[in-house]
Image (cartoon, rainbow, N blue to C red; front, side, top):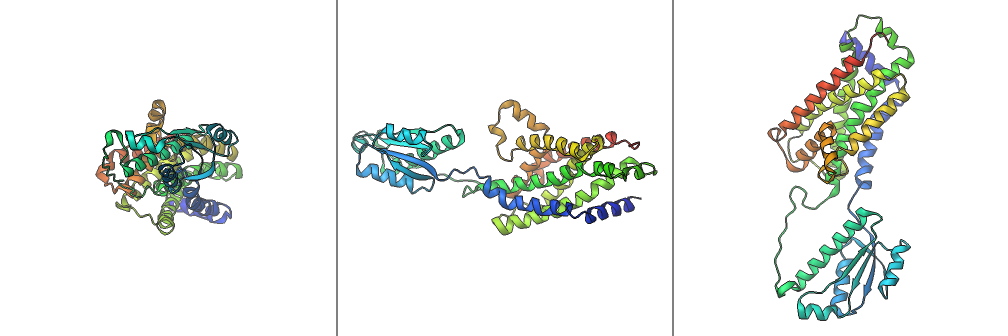
Length: 363
């Protein structure tokens, strides 16, 4: 009975000209485009410089800032008020004001204050731009030996797991998890309700097919498609971004198996209680936006408010994103991720029980 039901499901998918394109083409385009677009590394920050010293050291500091690649020089303003006008007209994002007698104070006292004024309308850009600029000035002081007390301190830093601070290495594993969420949840949410609108669900309802077996036949095709998509995503991550997992990719497959069951069950539950595809789409969209925003895909969970951090504990996407990133970047083993696996399995059980309970054979 299950074999015939599965044959029916796959025939329905293959007959639909639009669905296969949604399943494969759109998600893969997202994997190629999003890591380049959703990049929180700030580049080309417009900078206005007010150099009141006009000395050799002030020019060296200016050259170091501009050669960093983070800043684009808007203008050399004669004074702070002119630079502020650039900020107000959105021509500049940050002002760097070098005081008069800057070189003299550095040589005599070993330190001199500079002013960094950032346009904080965009808080992220203003804050990170100021941070970049402060770090560059600190490096400049250390190179010149200009630190408090006339002593130069040696600083040696190491970036673990992502040595080149490549933001794409952080985003790609998260987007891979996001794509499985779309396949497992969003498309399955349209499945049963689609049959309701076509009237084919009535034919199933008059048969002796148990509802658990019927829902299983709905789950398995998207489960298999999810594995195919995960494999293609891994190939794209390797070919386009040169990203391969440090750990065992089999661990990701294992977690994906449980995760796909969880979100397919969630999508089927939405489909069971919805009367139209439009209703199912809006319901799924509402929940998925919450899952994505609270999943740590774009914003680190540690940076969220405390109440939001507690809410993420009830988000299966959060755990799967962490797993994919930990295997890809840190090379974590299954022993390191046992807690995550148990939690995802609990979500799978709960969501599929909800799907079975919510499905009514009487239509």
